[in-house]
Length: 281
Ligand SMILES: Cc1cc2nc3c(=O)[nH]c(=O)nc-3n(C[C@H](O)[C@H](O)[C@H](O)COP(=O)(O)O)c2cc1C
Image (cartoon, rainbow, N blue to C red; front, side):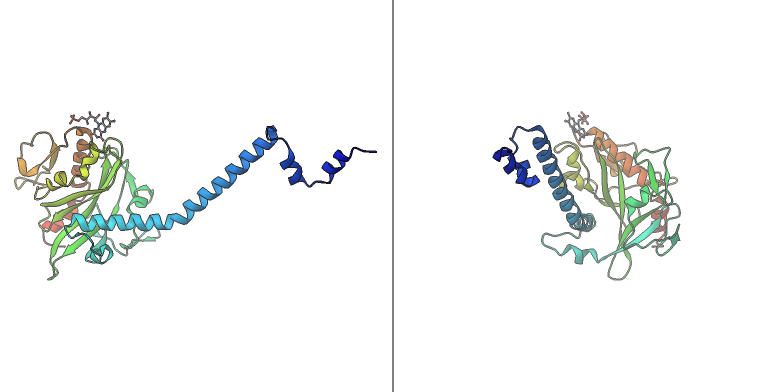
């Protein structure tokens, strides 16, 4: 006759038998650990997937806040989405300075409402690699989204241009607002970077941002040479082209100098700014 203890064990289901194994059983420990990992990863994945639309919505809103701010239209408590409707978005072809709204490129229709600048910079059909790359961005999109702000009579007030480039630790993404003369800076503002708080992150300090107001991109002389400079000492062209570098953050400041000069050059927005200066926009 068999042992009643063995009989009872044999009658138990697999789960009951598993639960009855001693806690120091290796197979039980490994199984419980794997089970916990599986459940935790499912919870994390579900949270990541379900929160993604909200994150994208917040990122889009943050960008809108920055466009509204750099153009000087921001006030506490305003309806940002409403304020953002004042701006006229366009997809710009950088090389020509012409708007490319509605153009079909490699099977994609360039729609200013949906054009994704960052995706375009990574898309092999919409971008080109850079060999001379002062802003350290590796590839440059052929098209970017720009925003126009007009006066009530329809004349141009400002153009808001996206700029980005590497600082010390991170790529800084922002906007530069240029007045209707195509040469006077109204503001520069970054909406994303990972520079050190108190050092490179002082690019967000309102006092430093205020230094950009009324600075000029190009000199009036000759070909209108690009003169805007972020440095510790003013350039030969004079103080109206000079933004004082952040103290203790020379490397981030150099990154900002590089990226602003790159995007304001012939390889960036200069073809478009020429058209702004000619009153064509
Ligand atoms: C932990 C740490 C974080 C730093 N973060 C930055 C930064 O975000 N941007 C920057 O330009 N310099 C940063 N620095 C300082 C640079 O290493 C360098 O000393 C500084 O850019 C020189 O600026 P200065 O010539 O104005 O002193 C950091 C240094 C340390 C130790």
